[in-house]
Image (cartoon, rainbow, N blue to C red; front, side, top):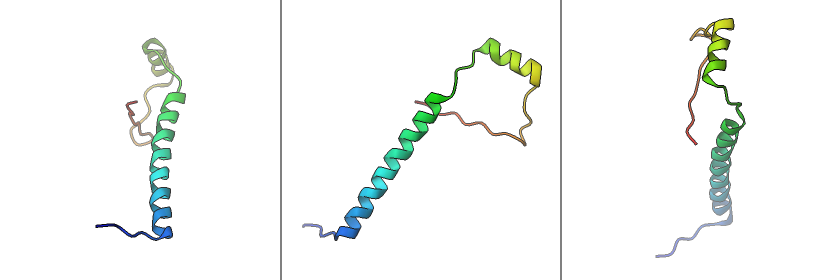
Length: 64
């Protein structure tokens, strides 16, 4: 049983696949470019500026 796909369907499938791959790579790149903050530095930041309110900020954790 052979599948017959026209050019538009093939192009759309490739385009979606490339977009998904690029999105995944951009997420990894963004996480890589975030500067490292040591625990001591984070404590100093919290001491100086306090924790942000939960209403004003969101945090995301990405595993590489």
